[in-house]
Amino acid sequence: MRVVCLAGGVGGAKLAEGLQQALAPGELTVIVNSGDDLERHSLTICPDQDTVMYTLAGIAGPEGWGLAGDTWQVIGALARLGEGTWFRLGDGDIATHLYRTERLRRGERPTEVAVALGRALGVPSRVLPMADEPVRTRVRTDGGWLDFQDYFVRLQQAPDVREVRFEGAERSQVTPEVAEAFRAAEAIVVAPSNPIVSIGPILAVGGMRQEIAAARRRGVRAVGVSGIVGGKALRGPADRMMASLGEEATALGVARRYASAQLLDTFVIDRLDESLAGGVRALGLQVVVTDTVMTDVAARVRLARDVLAAATAAPA
Image 1 (tube, rainbow, N blue to C red):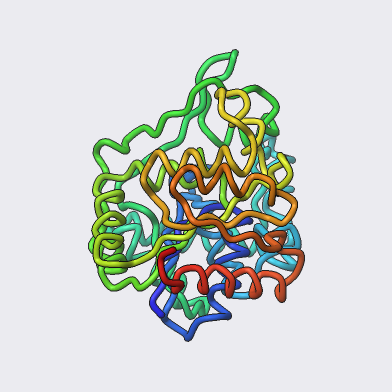
Image 2 (cartoon, rainbow, N blue to C red):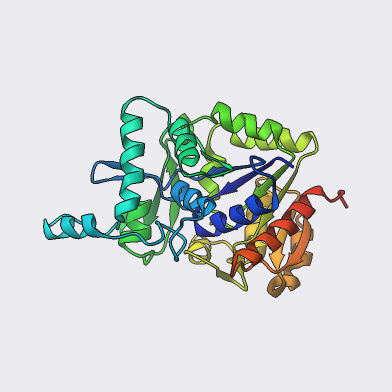
């Protein structure tokens, strides 16, 4: 089964790992959020892409980001020189950014560089940025507009978010590789990533919604997984962001957002939220209730298999 997964962050990377293990090599394509990308120390850094790539390569750090066993000599030396080091980069991680930055400066497309990185790290799946054009997520707080990583890392997600925008999205377009993946897909999966700032930027890319809609018209089923369980985000600030933006910070709130975008056929919620299943069905979505908390690799594979089963089930 050829599967396209939309993902960003640690939750997306975990489900992508489960899907990779449940599928044959080469059957999974992960389209990752690049709205979080930034430049630090003259290096191009793609946090979501690297989180997914390192996880699928089996080399991610224990927190789900960075490299396992990495060291911190360079960032320590920069701190001694008085450089701002709020965005910490491990030594091995810096090698990835050096490789990427050099190839981009030679004129290669971000997608070409991402494919080359995945190949070099032995990733059996394709990890593609959502677009080659730069799209940058910005959030408005009571103190004004912030670049996403200033809000997320430097300020530790402390300010309330009042508005979100994706600068450059209007000039972006799905790449040939992304379009090809959708046109070959037999299932579409929306990972339990932040629906606003991980999945939102992907959907804002020119042509993305149209590719998803075209796949669904030919019978491909789209299955989404809630990253909010019991009213709390499993990782990150999704619950707080939804609340400050006036949305219901529950699995039903996530389902409502995706239903309004006409994105999904089926929505997967945790057993803890089973009481919300009727509300999800009222949105026109089928519901799967299962264990969605991915505490280990076995749990990631179990959830992936549940998602794939939902993607192949006959419409109710």
